[in-house]
Length: 256
View 1 (tube, rainbow, N blue to C red):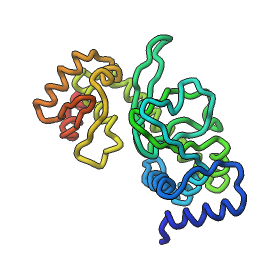
View 2: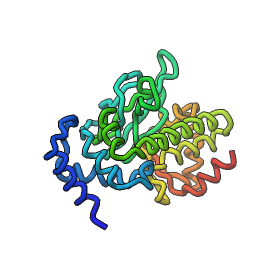
View 3: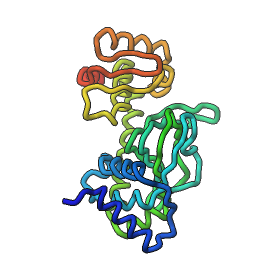
C-alpha cells in the first residue's frame, strides 16, 4: 500500500495544476503533513478512506492562533468545520445573559462547528485557545467539494455530531444524578479522552474551571481532589491535574 503522505503530495500537485481556485492554499511542508497525520488518526474518521482525509486537508486553510485567542464565538453565523491540528481549546457556553461556563476541551483531532446542510443555526460555543494552537478551517463550500468525491463525508460528520450530543447529555445526566466525587471523576475522565489509549493523562485545568464544569464550588472540588490525591488517583499541580489511575477513577464514577 502506498504511503498516504506521498499520495497526498501527488494529489495536491494535481489539484493545483487543475486550477482549484475555490480554496486557499496556505499549508506547506511539515504543517501539511502534520494536518494529514492528525486526520488519519482522528477517531471520527476511523474506518473511512485515507483519500478523504487527504482531500479535506487539501481543501482546508491552516491557521495559527496564540493562547487566549478565539477560534470561534457563540452565535457566529460562519459555517463549516474547525479541526484542531495541535494545541488545546476550551469551549464555553452562555448559561444566561451574564454567565459563561466552561463545557469542554478540544485537543488534537477534535472538531468544532457544523455543516448547515444537515444542521442549522449559529455556532453553539465560544472556543478559546488554552495554548498556542494550529487549526484547520474547512468552509461549507469546501465540504461540498470533498463530498462530491467522497459522499461518505456526511456520514462521518453525522458520527461526530452524534458523539458531541451524547457527551452533552452525559454531562447533564452527571450533574443531575451523581454525587460530587463521581461527578468530578467523570469530568476528569471525559476531559482526558484524547489520551484514552494511555494509563495516565495530564489535564490543563484549574480547580475553579473544573467547578464550573461540574456545578460545584471550588472548595468542594478541592476537598475531593485532595482525597483523590491521597488515594493515588490523581496528582495536583498549579493549573493542571494528572490522572494517575484511570481505572479506579472509572470505579468512582460508576459508583455514582
